[in-house]
Length: 331
Image 1 (cartoon, rainbow, N blue to C red):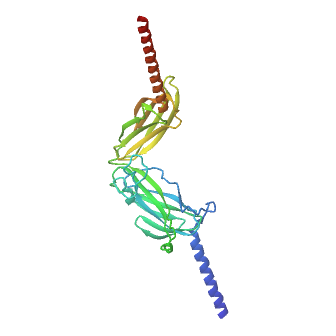
Image 2 (spheres, rainbow, N blue to C red):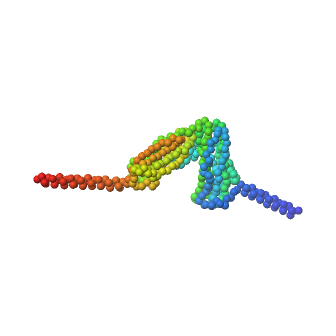
Image 3 (tube, rainbow, N blue to C red):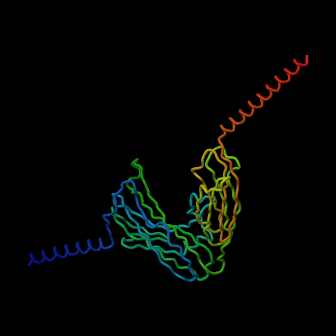
């Protein structure tokens, strides 16, 4: 009887263990195609959402994949934060700690997780654990208030590794990896307004001592909706009017910001006379600037000046000799 009870107990323990193991592995997706890299913590794809136009009172959902190519099991968290272009005109670095009328979407967004298990959850933040070659999806749900103000909204969802607490105080270098997923959506309704203009267009010159030929246009978004500004730089030879360079580009200008658009002809020769044209199109209106640019090495200018001076000196000397000869004849 005791033997049968022991077998029953062992069976229950094994069954429980198998059930727990199964429950732990249901949410774990191991992708063997992920290349293990000891220097990279996490990766997300895609890194930007498909832009949507949302109506006040509507709800939308999205998700992005998180992959862990690291070696050791790591604690991770995902958090929603505001996103803006910052104060510069080049959009070099985004700002993720400053709220504005264009980052209200952070208050409308809740985070979730697929294929991994949330270990802890806070307002706008979720914690989970990832093993080597594991992947899962961070999900988000955006519930736009019925009284939402119209215009563009920007946010970022950051996924970041949490350093091992045991490594602190050991003198070891502790790395924490963070990568972001950008959300850019438009909200229709009152206040949604697309307005903008070209403030200033510049073309280097009219004399350039060193190539390349460069240009720029400063575009200002005076509305509440983001828009794309189109920028085209064309270079032609001055005499034959032959096109030697042309490039189109398109850049996002976020609401209530200014953005500097740039053009450059990398293969500008060291010597030449060109007609440069810049066309900047904002919301269907095109601003055009054309300029003649002479590219000439300063060493050539110096050589020309020296040659002119020598020519003047030669003419002066020759004229002086002529005057002396006439005086001698007159005597």
